[in-house]
Length: 390
Image 1 (cartoon, one colour):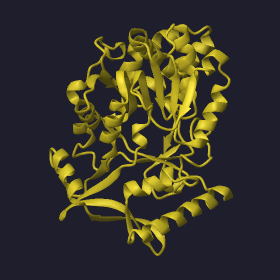
Image 2 (cartoon, rainbow, N blue to C red):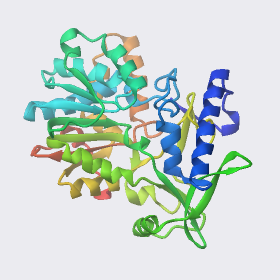
Image 3 (cartoon, rainbow, N blue to C red):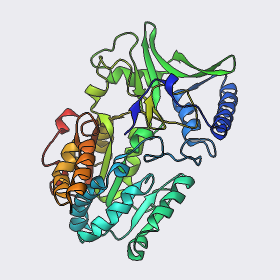
Image 4 (cartoon, rainbow, N blue to C red):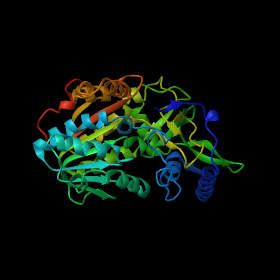
């Protein structure tokens, strides 16, 4: 699991890493100069995370798993994928159709889901992977080529959503928290937007008065009022992302698993410094300007914004709960109990604790189901219903 660390204790860079970081910094200096000396934080993220050849997700470093910068649930344990497969099977057996995974990371989830769905007699007609990173797509292909040919033949990669709305299941595991987001600060003179500027040619955080649209949105969600000095994040792209996915779903379910909170908890006045986290070599910290292009930067998800956008596009919020409740409802305990040996059972129990415990992923991560044309209650949400909190 990723551990928390002060930025000053992060490990030093290798020579090739330092050269890459310097190239990203040069690109940022040029961008900031073109924009009059300041760029908003979401524009900074578009460079350091997504710029071709420079951004964290488009460069060739190992990102996921124990050899990378952070571990997601599918890399942590196959238990996650087996439990999720039961929820997908319920939907596919009822409605049939395809399965579309957004941002498949290392391919770990697909490598477990497909054999599990086969065992449940619920294979999708196609398993599509929407991946915008050529580097990650190549790694996914390498990993998934190890699947039996009949399963491998069902996998198709795409760089955009299908032209025709699909029937089936859309999966987004730890995707929403990687969308570029804006940052803001509450000051005596009003809302300030935090961005990136230059000080003696070094990158530095700098604030400017928030524009009218940002100020209006912050006024809408600031209930109760925030104290002076309060800082947090806002992801305007999240609503549009959900709307786009909603239009791409003719019938079936969109399942989203991610770190996040309902709005009243996300923007609680006591959460003074927001949820921004950076990840470098299994260490979490808050210095977003450290090692640009070499570290992941994310913020938690406002699940109320997801629910609002889903309703606007005609989707039903069919379930919302913690990851722990979702996995328990989908049989993770039975998978541990079915282990073939005492040693394997002990290993799986340790992995399950990391997926389930409140101090690990169990409560920090949430699951939400957005459906269209699904009239049955979903098994993954039978133990807990947090929809009233949205």
